[in-house]
Length: 247
Image 1 (cartoon, rainbow, N blue to C red):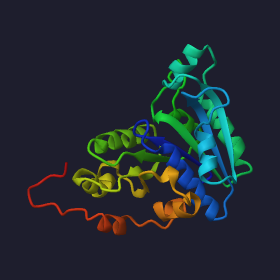
Image 2 (image 1 turned 135 degrees about the vertical axis):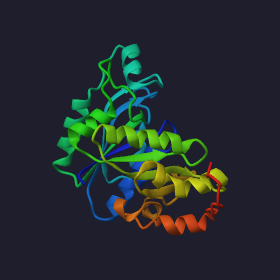
Image 3 (image 1 turned 90 degrees about the horizontal axis):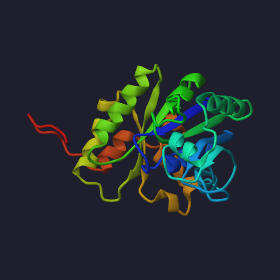
Image 4 (image 1 turned 180 degrees about the vertical axis):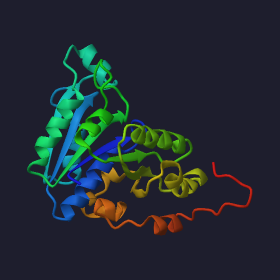
């Protein structure tokens, strides 16, 4: 793939760290990488944004582009309106990504919030940009209780728009996962209809050797070495007894 869209099942679940990990794995594989952040909210002029954070985590080597930023931590359409600034339209996102793809092996487009968060008053979303790009979408999900529903809704919304969910990555895998998180490792593929492609350790953003370690958190589809079955075994995913249901 040339362009990969990264979305999440919600906000603050690890999209930026996951995007950085995918970038780091691609760099390790010898690919040139660009990261496009269409809309940055909750950050003022000159402050550190998500695209800057990706650059920091991978220790440089990526082209980082941000199309717009709005100071209040709100949905993009609302933040743009309240700031009195023009919104970013899906076609602008698609055009910027396509331009970056002409001289990069991989372009990562990191959304804001979830898949259907509005970019503008007309209801344009990240899904619309992905459709214009004909790009697959990587879904970043939370680890614990409640994540299966939001993951299923996100992948269902993708397919309803003729978009391809590439897979699911757990954006922050806890050091001490509870029963729900461990069971979810087996349930993610069933509810999403796609593969589990990685698990980013909790606190990975502070990892002293992020770039070198990132491929071990991601599956081969993302240029990594992570194995879902081996990870589930190490996490001691409990068996399901006859007649029981997972949470």
